Image (cartoon, rainbow, N blue to C red; front, side, top):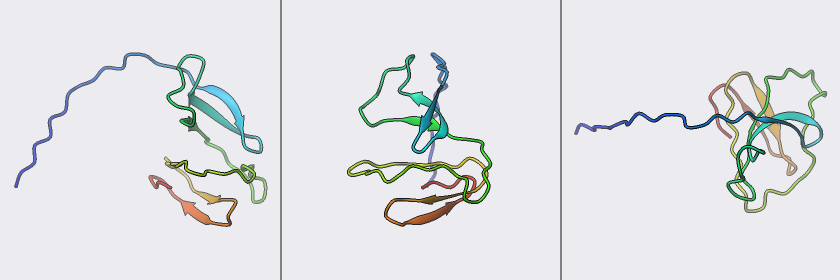
Length: 100
């Protein structure tokens, strides 16, 4: 069976600059949503960009224990490697193109 996928060209209607912000225990992020130029989509929807950053062992700044009850988070790593540790003690490593 052959599958045909029709793709319609779309144009970018607006561009919005990300705002610089500090998250968690002081790590830098560039926040796209919400921002002064773009209204919030919902009360818990954020689109942030982190990095590129290089940190030495034991110098990384994280986010102290905070609940994600009922909230799903998604991280997509474009390049490099990272290790994520949550407040429940779960640990996972990520590489380029991987999603957590």
